[in-house]
Image 1 (cartoon, rainbow, N blue to C red):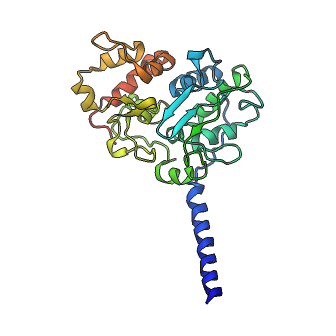
Image 2 (image 1 turned 45 degrees about the horizontal axis):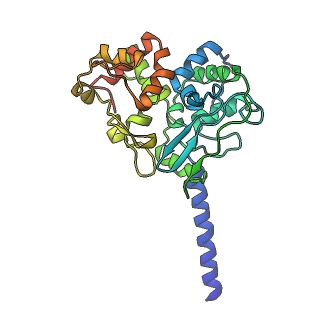
Image 3 (image 1 turned 90 degrees about the vertical axis):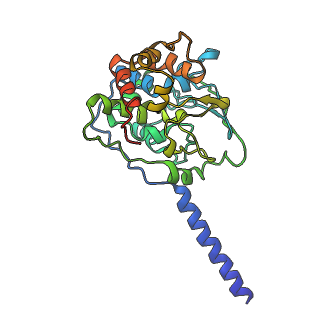
Length: 298
């Protein structure tokens, strides 16, 4: 009887361990073949502005070098710090390959295969186009290499363990590309790409579940940002309710000024300062067209 009990316990441990390993491995994300593409540094610098890379990875308030590591991002799970992504061989990503960079952005994995925490918005970047990934890589490689960087993440137990992020990915990571939507203009399609991929608007403007996944049934209905900042809704109904017109929203994304003459504050001020004020008029117009479309798909 004792041997039988031990055998059952042993089998349960093996099965449980295998199940845990499978669940925490995360979903399969296809490795992209980028070998036939050439990166454009200038276009990549623009993609960095579209994607918020400079705002997160640069501690501008304390005079930090570009992409050398960002300030603290305070959350209910603890403190995150965007790392040094300059080409420094030890403290940055100077030893990475294009494939390493692509896997980090589109699969949320380190070169060693470890899951990255979704403070890196790879659930959005997984939908970046191949050309945007390659151009962004060229731009990141072009900045000066900087030694040192921010401190390690300061996360509360048990959130500092990387392995369970694989299970989180099974719940919340959708690596499929954004398919075109019939009947919508090219401008609308571009706006959708910006909102749902590069600019990752839903990272802040969508409510989160208890374990940090986006509640897609309430997309763009507002959320909570770093330091418990209240992030407003940006659904078409909410924008209309607040009296926004397309012209006013385009102007605000360029200047940070609201129709009443106030300045947009909080994290949105940083988004504008380091991002949207550098966008082309066409991209700002595309984003606004998409956000204000009451018939856009959820």
